[in-house]
Length: 549
Image 1 (cartoon, rainbow, N blue to C red):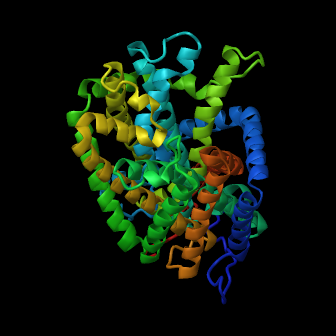
Image 2: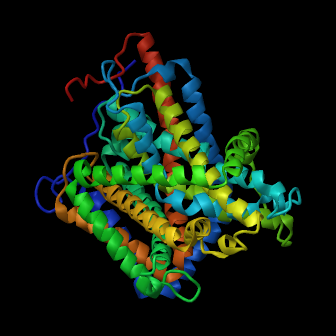
Image 3: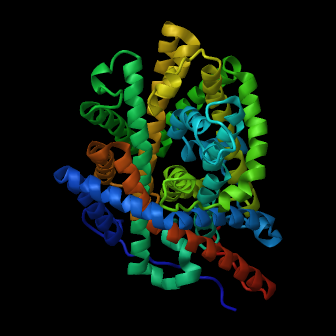
């Protein structure tokens, strides 16, 4: 039996502007992103219509694919953790030790995978599902009543719990396994070597890495799109952004442009300073502010509702998870319950599955970078369970407080009627009054900015790592600036074309090809581990000697 492949040359330019980069991947991804921006700016109506039509087509025809492929990631993760041989394999050589403490490792995983989403959706999503969810549509519960409280959390936890983190874990585990055990480049194509071998050095590998870059840009664009709306809402709340919102309370054209310039300008400067300076400093600030905000909600929010949502809601979620993972709703064209269930699943679950897939190259590569020296079992259980529970804590105390304020009549519909990005500001304003509510709004805006900047600058560095064939070394400043500007341009152009709906459409479209890549990554990883077991049984080496590397 032959040893595994431990060499995958990726052609990069030796001189010139693209020195150190794969020209095929870098130029192709730049052209694709550039054309998307130009199309959206030059033909906004056509772009909005086409993106919307493609989005509807994918939701109608690939909803089952997204549902089943995400369910498979959960099964593969649990299977690898339970598989005795696989679970004890180390991501690296036998003498490699984890670089970070468990606390630092968990903190970085949570910040990379969630970030901005907590500030928007920890309040907004439970509120939405409290009013309407599949149980309400089927007549099993009544919306906006206390009897629907736990259902709201069951469905919220579905989207932000183990399924989301399983997709990140699969991407991160595959990248780490082949980089640290085989010595292959830390880039997406390396994870498919058991299936395609040395062919990945050529055009096939370039296509895979390009798909990953485009998915990453669109996935992060979705996050930034939500962040822009919330940033403008926050600026309006603290009294210096009334001119940034329109009559409906959403970000105006001017508001979008100003927010993008501020966020992407700061993130590009941070990316230019490197991981050790800007990103590290920002991560420390947002971790401190996150702990402060969560602590405030736990102490002064609706503690009983929060604890009930956390513990009873988690129980309801775990019990219902197998059915929720594999259920695909199909409409019958009558406009009845079946059509409403299909519409709900497309707007919520399938949207989230596409978003997490699009985010997976970004988060996965980051998880791989911080997980060398850990066993597969340790990686899977750590990446799957701890960050998911942190999400549950945020959702339970933030969303539980908002629901309690509405149920008790104190909020009088102010949280229900606020825009998604403004719901957290509405809630804290009701809790604290005008003066202290204003101060808390300032804290939330600062926290939001640190999350947005951290997400954007990390994405720029990750994209450049993939473009450079896995080389994590410093990149030319112009490449960092280009991707900072390009990311901002994608967000701004799509928001102006059709708001968050246009970004969602582009992201769902861009994530579809990468969902196939991720399914192949799962198969590739299982095949590699199985064959390594066979190799060890006959005394064939399964790891590259990376000592001192």
